[in-house]
Amino acid sequence: MSAFTIIGAGPVGTLLALLLEQRGCRVRVLERRADPRRAAPERGRSINLALAARGMAALERAGLADAVAPLLIGMRGRMLHERDGELRFLPYGQNAGEIIHAVSREALNRTLLGAAATRPGIELVFDARCLDVDPAAGTLRWHEERTGQPHQEPFELLVGADGAGSVVRSALIARGFTQASEVALAHDYRELDIARGSAHVGEGFVFTPDALHIWPRGGFMLIALPNTDGSFTATLFLPRAGAVSFERLSTPADVLGFFAREFPDAAAVIDDPVAQFTRHPQGRLATLYCEGWQAAGRVLLIGDAAHAIVPFHGQGLNCGFEDCLMLERLLDAAPAASDAFARFEPARRADTRAIAAMALENYVEMRDAVRSAGFAERRALGQELEREFPGRYITRYAMVMFHPEIPYAEAQRRAVLQEQVIDALLAGASRADAGRLLTQAGL
Image 1: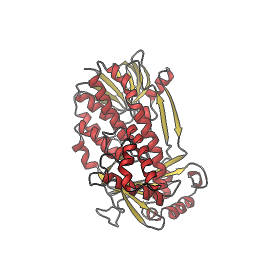
Image 2 (image 1 turned 90 degrees about the horizontal axis):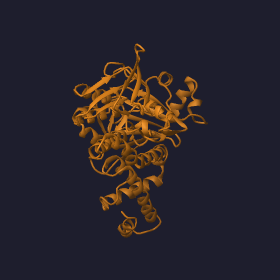
Image 3 (image 1 turned 90 degrees about the vertical axis):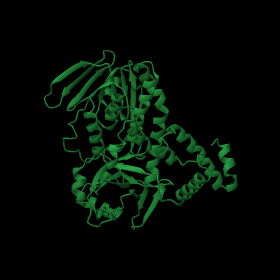
Image 4 (image 1 turned 60 degrees about the horizontal axis):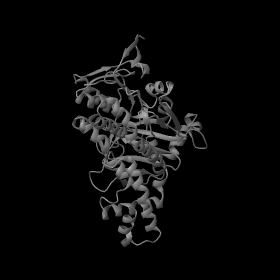
């Protein structure tokens, strides 16, 4: 069987290693960071992950669903926090199985790496910084972070799973195989920790743990995801510049006043927000548009290295895990790995572009639209149609999060048609016409 080198031992790279080894391949994984199972976690940049049906399908394929299960907290919907303290709960779906799982990136990665370390066909190399990849020559340059010792070695097949700042992608761009551009969001983020509380809302959680908590403020927002230890990881998404922005939060008084005014119930439980705000880095958000994901039949980009998206649909991890399943299917069908590499981008491009667009749209929904009466009316009507016409009408959110059998691009296409049906009903079409309208829309 083939020998693979994977650059990047994050969740996507490690899951891919497990799936490839499961096929009988030999896999070597190089990661520039220290082994996270032994090193202190990197704080302030994680944006806790949301694991949905697409990601769970990949974990089940790798035989790891049971190992990951203790790390997960099921979230049934969004809990909206208004300035006056009012809470409104919006369920994600219409049955008990339609939930999203909050999971710590660090805990998930440690579990995947622990599984990989037990596989005889996988070699994990940490503190190994990739410097360059030459697809034509089939050579890789890297050095040991601790010693600076340089290495140059051949590879048979190489997969760049090294994230949005991919060194592998840069090497392909430098050699003319790949073109890429980033479209930065005008909003940045900072993380804040909410510790396990003494005001018990079940097992020490200061807020109910079965929800994604959102403080939508129309142009910016705070979110908080539960952790298994009773804490929450909160993330503030805010414009970099402007009247209400990160640049206006330059003093302790600015930070304290902002949180007290905009998120009073969160401000009451965030331990020393000024210290956290100062200590945790301000992260950037961007969508990566990349063409040329493979080179010379030897090198392939996958996950964020090929198609990084903003986090507002909770699909970055799920999309990357789905990449792994797609590559596995292509390897099964193709006569050689080089053919699978060549087919990968055409098979995934439409879907990754679709989820990139939907993630950007979901940010507007989360921070603003969820507060409007029009959103509530459309949402309620959509859920009624979903109950009345099961399988024919499925809300876009449900298609993305709970139906991995529906490709992202198909979910996007169907959602446009479904919105037209709702427009017709809101314009006066009768409910008796709903079925006919769905048929006319091709649903």
